[in-house]
Structure formats: structure tokens, C-alpha cells
Amino acid sequence: WTCSVAQQAEIPPIFIWEGSRRSIDPAPTLSRGGLVNRVSGAFSVTTKVGMLKAVHSFTLRKGTAFPPPWYSLAYELPADLESWRQHAQQHPQKRWIYKPNGGARGIGLILVSSVSDVDSAERPFQDRCRAPRAEDMHSSPLEERYFAPSGIIQEYVQDLQLLRGHKFAVRTYVLIARVKPLLVLLHGAAYAKVCGQAFDAACFSQADLFRHVTNQEFQKKGSEVHEDWKVWPVMLLRDLAQQLHNDQGQATLWLSSFWKQVREICLQVIDSFSESIRESQPGMFEILGLDFVCKADGSLIFLEANRDPSWVIDGGAKKAIIPALVSDMLSIVLRCHGGGESSGWLNPGGHEFQFEILVDEAKEIQ
Image (cartoon, rainbow, N blue to C red; front, side, top):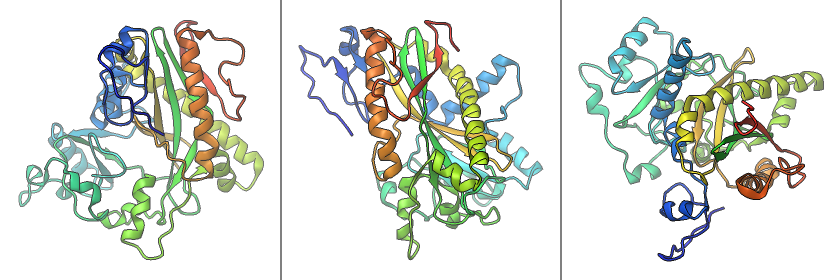
């Protein structure tokens, strides 16, 4: 759902909710104690390069090795092209995926098997780069792609847990409900996105994108290049667990392990850019979609934070999540900006899934 407001010079809106593009100057609204669904300090980590730099800075600050166990090794391109080249040549068994800095909906992703796929004497990297164009949105999903002026190349996770032979990723939701004092919550619902083609680590060319890219908007384009194409509907996390494990006890254990890891990883992701959040103006809030893949050993790998998680209700799973999530999110934001945190404030609608606190600096919870 979307909301647009024709801003008047003398009377700024008291509440702004906008989609992917900034259309209204939030300063007048914030100066009058209003609310805006954008946290300026969170923007950088919703880009691929920004998240890479945040995670790298996080490990330096903690004195730990980069990358952390929950983030795949990545290099910024073109800045770290030579460093990546040396590493890739030393580890030829690794596979890589290129992600443009501001990419979304699977646009601009490139599967990389060798250094020559990125840079060679005959065709150097700079000759393969160009700025994204509007027509790229409508191009064939499997046509040859150019590298963007800015992006990352990241080690591709090959030892995945699969659903009936197909790759899946899980979308979770994190709400930055208040910036001062910082309040961050995790929603208790999640859904799985599944690739339409069976996974095969040995098939790793641009023709195999539908085996490896779980983005649902991209998967919907499968009918443009494959006959009898069927998009797997997204599914609730509990339904995924039951399909992964026929035994109910094992499914419950899997869910418990998944959420335990998500909480731990989200806390570290938040820590990686918390200072930037605190520098944002009071009245800002934002909900982010954080995506994960599951390795065969049960551990999770964090993929990215999405600034505009899909609000399209295109199936039963999203219908079970999104309306209640949005209702509770707005109620929580209003309460923590002046309404007071009364009993049941984390689940004001009494819905099946509810928010839980990850960080609350007002109560020294983190």
C-alpha cells in the first residue's frame, strides 16, 4: 500500500509514509514533532556497498576477523578489484555473485565462476561497466548484463539447505521504531521465497539465474524464458519447517534454531550502524526486510537489508503477515513517540505474530 500527500507550504503533514523514492521534504514535519517512515542513518546499509562497509567496520571495532560467520566474504568493485582477483585465483573452487549497489528485484545480478567473467586482457572490467538504464527494468531476465559503476562481488553460498531440491531464502522484518533513545524490534513472522528451477551448484551461468535468485519479482519473469513456468508461492516459515522436516519435533527444533540465530545476527547488524541511527532526527522510524539463506549445516547467512520490503499481498502467506504487521507497527510507533508503552503494546491487535524487543536503550536492553 502507498500513501501520497500534496504538501502545502504553510501546513506540513504531521505524518509521512512514502515508498521507494523521496517525494516530500521531511524536515518541516519532523520540526513540528511529526513522524516520517525513513531513518536517514539506515539508508547506507540498505545498499550493497554500504552494508559491506558497515560489517567491515563492525569487525574492526570488535577486533574480530572479517567476514563474521554470518556474512559471506565480499569485495567492493571496482575499488577492490585487484584484491578480489588475487583471492579468486587462489580459490578457483569458489563461486561469486555480483550485486549492483542500488540493485533491487534481481536486476543487475551476475553469476561469476572465474576471474575472466569479470576482467580479462581481452575485455577489461571497465569495458564491461555502464550505468543502469531505465530500459534495463524491461529487458530479458537472462540477457547479458553489465557491471554497474558501484557494487560488490560476494562469495556465493553453495552448501545450501534445500526445499525439495530448490534454493530458498527467508524474509524477516526489523522495525526501527524510535531513534532516540534507540528502540529496535523484530517481528515474529517470516516467509520463504523459493526458486522455480531446481538448485544445481554445477550450473552457474547467467542462464541459471532462476536456480539461484530467490527474489519473487525476478522469479515471476521465468515465464518469459521458460515454458510451463510456475512460480512457487511464498510460504510461512512454520510451513517451510514442516516441509523440511516430516517430524513435528524436528520442525520445532529447526524453527527454534532459526529464530535464535536471527536474533543474534540482527543484533550485530544493528550494532554495525547504530551510531548512524542515533544521529538521525527524532520522529524517524523505518521497517526493514532482512533476508537470510540457510546452509546445509543449519547455520544462517545474512544476505541484505531491504529498505522497501514488498507490501504486495500476492498469496496466503503475505496475507497472514502484512496487514497485521502494518497495523501493529503503526500502533507501536505512535505509542513509543508519546502514547506510552502500556500492557500488550508489543501486540496491540492481539495477532498471531507479534514484535519483540531487540534493543531498547531507554530500558538498557540490547
